[in-house]
Image (cartoon, rainbow, N blue to C red; front, side):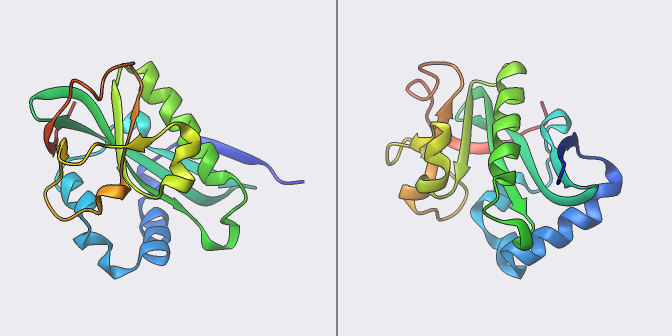
Length: 166
């Protein structure tokens, strides 16, 4: 019988999470636009979660506070990482679900991410209308997704995405 626990990320988890990200995304991950948004700004500590399977770290998710244009109350989900050996077993889904619940509880209005609709659509993410939100680099418009934690949050939000410390 396996036991999966979700915990807040601790400083001691950093090396293992970095290794998981390297395995999952490779060395080019730092050049991706979503990484560039987060660069130099710490994620929201209460939204940095780790997944533990039988006492072994197998995944993690982070959220970074962002402004979109001049609007605050947004967060950027990512990275979400799950150890390749346990992908497809629901651990990423559990981490995202818990993170979204906590983001809503902390008063965030909108969650953005760059990802695949077949995966993130199950959480309620939808495509951002082309041209409404800009990231500091190239992004396939079909992969720019948003989830309103407060109804109407996306319709009143437009502009450049910038990370900030909450």
